[in-house]
Image (cartoon, rainbow, N blue to C red; front, side):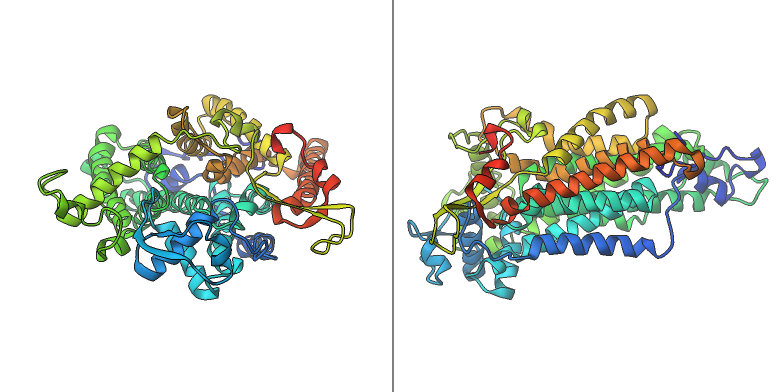
Length: 536
């Protein structure tokens, strides 16, 4: 395990029993991955974030149309800015909207996704205007860019390597899946941001919690901790990063209910890390202690905060009267959950109606795809397609095309898929907690969709998985490169292979950039990008 560029120094068998419970010895056992230092600690995140920002903000207002599901979320955001809740629109109102003549109706609309994502789209519209693409896509581009930063920071915490942090950030920055969704005003980029932000906060909490555990157990060399502490371990009351993670998870559910699987997996993962920490520290009754002192305490602090955060995203609907089902409790006395206050009883009914819609959604769509095709990018979604003959809209060729398709960098995506399968084998064989954390996160975003095989689903539902797929590929790259630069020809040859691989990915992203950004290109050139029939 200590032969790769991954920062996995010797877990440091203590030199003697006299040193077993010194602070340095405990910390070495609990946190064997040493955090890198130096100016690269801020230079690398800054550079990859700048690259990501350029790719997400350049010509963001193009096309000046509501593409794909922007027709729902952008107009919902506008309605919420006007009244606090979603409202109906006149038929065929997209052209009037982008022309600055919104055809908003008085009747409330039945919307099946929580409000937070639309409020975030609305922030960009408030700052840069309601009726231009830059305004309604600003927030998605911003949070897509910040997601790249978070992936870089997560990689540094996981792997303890500037090189691997740079690789992870660069992979995320140039991936077309993330780029397209950052340049389109849909909800999924917000979901991805809150999920990776929660994961980053949990990694910070793991470091903070284990440092606090080491500090509370530490005694001078040659001594032993208090017997009660040695049996049960201390309570760790103050976990600020864990609270941040919980708020991020509540925000994720406030974007889409599919985030509930991440809530379950991340909370369980945090508690399991606590179990492992007490065992590694040498607590005698680590199982019962972790259950009573970490598990129960975490449950009563985390779950209510998730719920409160989620409820706060419905503030606009709760403080107004015109939203769909807002007065259901008054109109249906005695029905539903009777002990809830009227507004919350109405909200619960709204959720029941929304759940029935989600589970029953099985209408055919030309760009739907099965989850089994997602690991291979079998059916990305064509968001925008316009063809022009010569002389039309500036086309100087026989036939021109503008395309925006939710296609990832295919070489990177396939490499990530292979890496995840290899990561399963590595986790089984080496029991590396980092492999388990990445795989658990992928499972949280993928497996629940298999429960609804008849439901209409789209490839962009995979977006919350992208950061963890990138981390899986980065992990395997770290395993591939020997840790010791002085290991000779093996080190040099593998560094060259990884460098060529990264260069190939960058060239591939450059090749696909026109169909991620909607540039006008020759129609024949667009056809060169359709490597699989299902992409076109």
